[in-house]
Length: 111
Image (cartoon, rainbow, N blue to C red; front, side):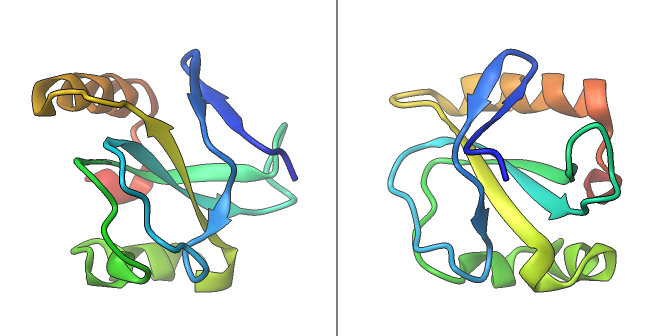
């Protein structure tokens, strides 16, 4: 498995299973990724993009309003998070990056 993902020239972090995610203190845009070795050319598919001023605690994704949709798409052990860190970014900057990703890729769980 890759150590990072480059999407629209943005370097997203190492993939971490959402069940093992420990939290993250910086702001950024995140991708929820379904791992599927049959999906090509890379074994992942982004199913949701979001933004946050921080990622406060382990397990907080289970409280996300789209969490139940994510687990309908894939088993939780096959769901990963990858973060594009945006240190000292404004809410508007994160919103702009998110809007660009959404308009380009239209992930299934962002409707």
